[in-house]
Length: 395
Ligand code: SAH
Image 1 (cartoon, rainbow, N blue to C red):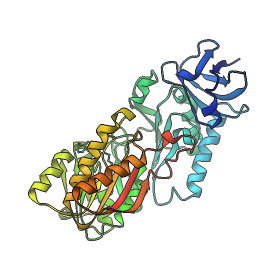
Image 2 (image 1 turned 135 degrees about the vertical axis):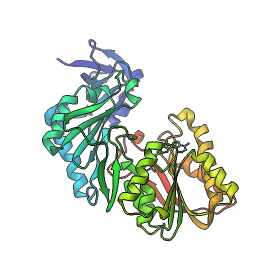
Image 3 (image 1 turned 90 degrees about the vertical axis):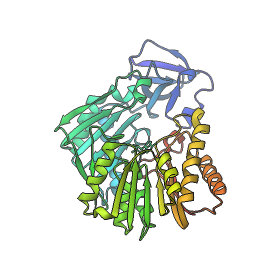
Image 4 (image 1 turned 180 degrees about the vertical axis):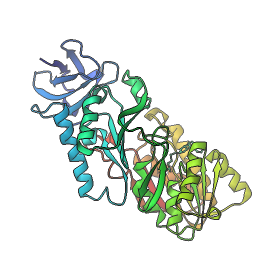
């Protein structure tokens, strides 16, 4: 018989709304001592069955729900079903068109709590971010192989989130071939090089895929400043769409090295781009002092707020860079600005940009509001899944 976890009276409410996390404070009683990741049955204070999930003894998120259906349980068959479902709808709705890289499994949204699976050409890259997912690693890897037979399956479980779940960080090959040091992918005809082993996240910012091309539509003939460029994604898209010149700025040497290689791979001539491996905050001040101006600026910074507590400081940092960017834009220029801080809600981000425009003495018109790419969906019952906000402004 499986372990039963009984909730405090009233704590079942979020589960009834299908929120997939149960916090430690909601737990009234546990029958036995479940291992990290072990599947448990959750009941309410009157004994009614609610859900089945993976237990994590150390995490504040004590249980991650696998299913609200008593007939279902985690295991190879369910994994096959959910992997197929996630692939089918992405294919049906065109999310696999024109790209060789996409997010296949986006955690809770695709029925795999704490699991990310990204596809890069012939390879699959996984992040096991919860004890619930980690305990099923072998079955999940076998299921991925069964559904897609990739050349290799690589693990990038090197996110600090694992520490909260009492798990050690781990990277390495899980199945099949070792990935090459640099793997080539294609997005809308543009070739990108991805470092699966050591690049950020699983190697590439797939969440910005559609946004790269949405933003590029405004780039014709523009002199573009691509801040926090990573390996050059927004810049390559802008140049391909007819930008005159792109200046990439990022503090990461390996990212800039790949950015240059990416430009070359796409036959973008050296006089159409430059790279500056430096801090963006300093670079923006420097450009102002030098009187440099741009027609388009992309601001895609890293997460400034890890938690709600850090939002006030993050607001100041977002305002700083957006204000500085607005000063550098020619009249009528385009600012494409993003926040990937999940702790910061959309209206706080909008307000921050509004304050920046006010201080810059510029009218900023929102032309487009952007979000994470649709292969990174989130449930209406699980707002925690929403993190990437962006807008295209005419300033
Ligand atoms: N726009 C990119 C993703 C950007 S991720 C794309 O589409 O692929 C954020 C980037 O900011 C990372 O590459 C990181 O190296 C860089 N970064 C973080 N802090 C920085 C700073 N203070 N100055 C410059 N770059 C920074």
